[in-house]
Image (cartoon, protein in one colour):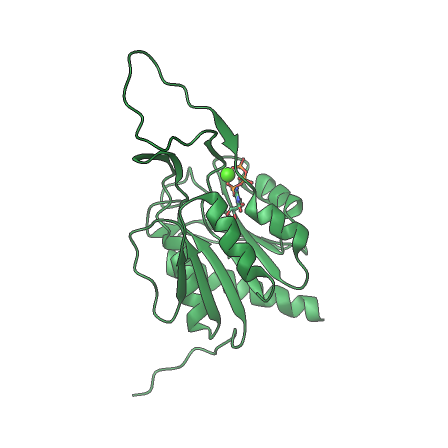
Length: 226
Ligand code: CTP
Ligand code: CA
């Protein structure tokens, strides 16, 4: 029998995806990070590849194998991710920032392992660069897709991020809901586009969610051309 082939809707497009957490060093053996597994971003990269795109996956540390046909660039820190993404930005058609970038990093990085000492240890933290916001300021014809991890007022906060970072589309997830968020194989997403469309989805596998994200993005692109 013949399998129905999916239409390669992204043929000839360069799609840059970021995924996973970042790790912010304290000393050679310690770092700050978050619970991101990278699964959502990897599912997006895999879907983009299936749709015929040339895919660059810029990934923080994860346990996941690189999807077939995808070019992976491994990074650790927010700063390294920033440099890798900006290096791919000029000729990108679509940039999807699924990574859970650390908002803060230790102000001082110790070059030697810090020995334990009596009493407390306070670590001063400084802000990392907001990669997506910077891309939003620089963008020309690129389509920019962001994520919003929220535990309350999901749509309201996501709409603010879409505006503040000059995005075309934002995928909001309610990390307080069961079946959604950083670690599992499923997600509950709401997709908001720049032209004011909002769509809520039920519990989906991350593969299925990735497909819906491209459905919405391609619809948005069609509306822009009209
Ligand atoms: N992001 C980024 N660089 C950062 C922080 C976040 O590019 N330093 C991106 C994420 O990849 C995501 C989007 O911005 O696509 C939103 O991330 P989120 O953590 O939800 O929002 P923040 O803007 O960091 O705000 P807050 O954490 O305070 O809600
Ligand atoms: Ca954040």
